[in-house]
Image (cartoon, rainbow, N blue to C red; front, top):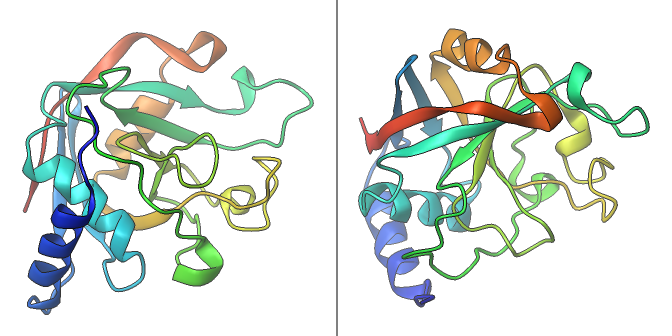
Length: 190
């Protein structure tokens, strides 16, 4: 059942506006922790959406399940390098998709360690996210990884734990999906 996103977004925005520092989160995995800083002033709806899932504990017992790199992409595709995680087909307690915040509006480019929302079409992102490995301009607005050219909604950056991201990125992933997913024990605010 989809919930109205307006109430959690308003509450999250009110809480964020009273804080001087950007929120930080820890992604606790079985391979180590990843710490990221989120940018609510630049991407308020996306950060509020992500923190809703964090604060409700909906990322607990989730996983990293997809790795995209040169050796597992079709030859005719625009190359990217990311690890993708989230609730992986768990639609329970999913809230309404978040509005698409383009990188040319937010000013957050997909450089090494950027955390961003996965989506099919603009305005379809819910809980799935990815982290870039290296600079990935094809994921920014105007980039053509998606044919619509709208890019993906970047909303934060890894501040510690890129060694863990790179370790996950190096795991064998035929057809981009990990044979054995990497458990995310939980994601929580630091």
